[in-house]
Length: 362
Image (cartoon, rainbow, N blue to C red; front, side, top):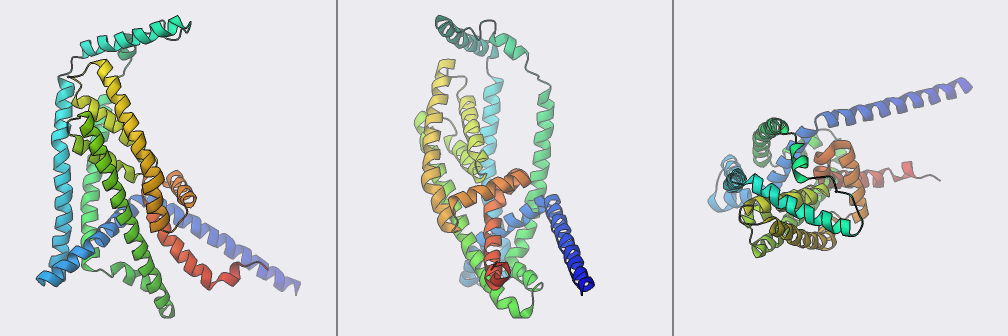
């Protein structure tokens, strides 16, 4: 009897170890193909957003399914190209402004401000920057990083090109075969459980639709506020800068910081030849104050509406999920954390209700 119990325990241990190793292997595999998962998720979002337009084309103009899917995808690509084409003149103008900058005069102005700060500190008996000059600081800047930066930008451009075609290809077939994802899942589950998973998938689609709609509203509100802020200050290309800064908010926590730096940088280079250094400091101050106020509105009004109500999760719960995903998968993990967690959460809830007695400790 004892030998039989020992065999059962041994088999249980082996099974547990095998399950743990399988789970670790699965996580490692998902980590290695994380960029493909991102492509699939982006394509899924595009297909979900494009289904109303596709349904309209089929119902109103009697288009075939393939033609309606192709036209829907074409509309999305056209919008993307128009947005991208709007940024090209702005980038050209920023580069032109920098090329015309009188760096010697800029350095003298910067040294003047630095000397005033140093004089003020000396009056307070604070000697921190006594032997430091702007010219010595600028002379230590390593300009050899410029070629490395260009190579990095070219690599990013290549990856974006590959991603663009991959997402377009996947999105077309997800639009054309609207039940492609559902059919693939149904092949992996028993027939008697299909009805339950139909309900789960419908709930997932509903919550994700609400989440992406809320995200679109959030970005639109930020874009509006940023545009008003930059136009009031009088920044050139204010609309495009505002749009770029708003889109960066898609990356939780890190995106707003990068957006603030980018907004200041682009605003400065837009007017760098028409503003003295004192004016630039005032410009940075005004942009920073407005940006912080807008971010506070977003944090306390917009985000609770989107995360808490759309995906029905507590803000602290969402914060921990984003932090864990960011630690494991970097920026990509932070972007896909909420929609992926929403799907897993619904699946676990359904699974837990069915096997609740297994997890209950009496």
